Length: 268
Image (tube, rainbow, N blue to C red; front, side, top):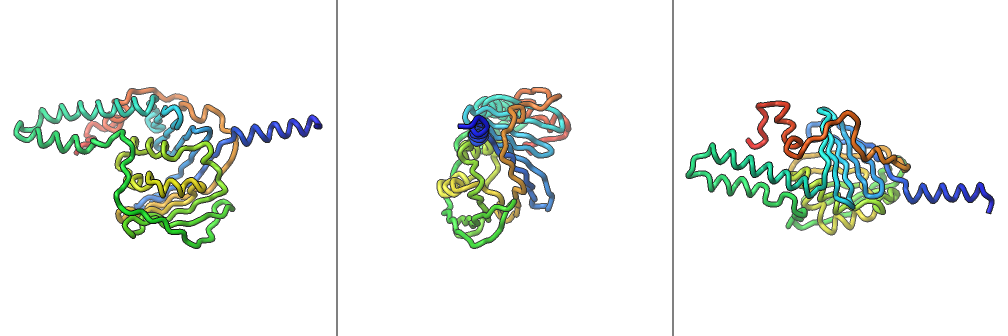
């Protein structure tokens, strides 16, 4: 075999074996605000970034890096250590609140407060609603690629419109179940996770990668769309810690809003 051909094949094989994906898109929230977002995905490493937050997960080792690019702070650890730190912080908060509550109301308050976090850090609780996935005819192309459109219904009511691109072959280095678990820990009030973690929805995600989602969950509309997809080798530093950021423990990370604003209280 000619040397130049051999080199080409080696480069081609290396690219296909190790190349990741950079997905650039936007999120349109229920108030009409547009937020630019990017995902970096390579070998079970996932990085999500927007103007005020950066998440980096290793879906195999369960490590995470959380970065506040505005305050230049970051937390690094395992998801298990993060959960442990959050629960410890919530328990300390409860003990302080109990001192301010009349004795005859403490037990009732403790029960209600604890119930809010009973499922925190546990596998996503799948909804008991019936889930229907309905294929729809749609000719939408996203960055030149054909898509398959579906409607997700809960108890026969539309919850989501979803466009999947079979051409985005990302699932070979991505684990949806692990990713949704990470998100459930960081965003425990993210209600759509309850149907996204269901087997029918996960099976659908196995057919390609979502490039557009319109959520109409609980009367609100949120619109996500990927506008650009690049397949390339992503350097390791992209999944690391940005320069100039200061490491903080879990307690300081989750209280960083309060540290900036002494009147802030997320327990009201």
